[in-house]
Amino acid sequence: MTDLNEIMKQAKKMQEHFHESQKELEKVQVIGESGAGLVKVHMDGRHTVFNVELDDALAKEGKEITEDLIAAAINDATRKVDDKKKEALGGMAGNFKIPPDFKFPF
Image 1 (cartoon, helix red, strand yellow):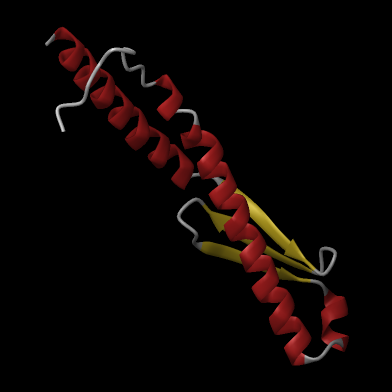
Image 2: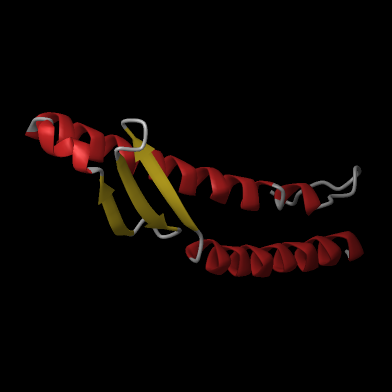
């Protein structure tokens, strides 16, 4: 029974760490780019876009190209946020130690 209690303690610690990490990750800010920096999208860890920068050179481009570049920059920022989350949260499961002879009750 001690093994189960220890595992439950570890699971609770991991859950607390997960919630703390998520709060910290919400504060993360990334910049997604496209068109070699013609478009920059600033996004936080909750995937909220809070700033968009368009280079003046885009004024010469057509509407469709500008729209495509904005979409690509948003996708780049989203991928960067997701990568940071995976990086930060990925190692947590490795800290969860289960005794080799432990058998789950289900």
